[in-house]
Image (cartoon, rainbow, N blue to C red):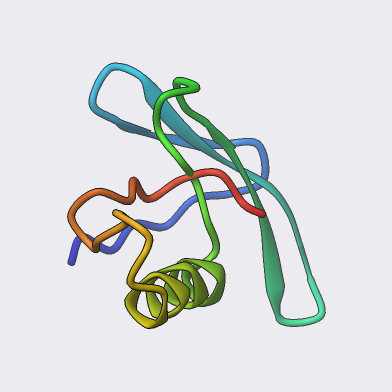
Amino acid sequence: MLILTRKFGESIMIGNSIRITILSTKSGGVRVGIEAPKEISVHREEVFEKILANAKNNPNTSITEDSVNVGEDN
């Protein structure tokens, strides 16, 4: 795990196409903005885990841990 310190308004780049920007900090939380290509899904971890759990419980789905992109928050 890479650990970085960022201030309000500063960003982190992942590859050439994903930018994570610190939008604000308050009450022990951090608001983060994520810019990524549309083909990359972005989810909070707890949402991602629910997607995987639902897929495992539904034999009619083709979603697997390998086929779900970390991305779009639902």
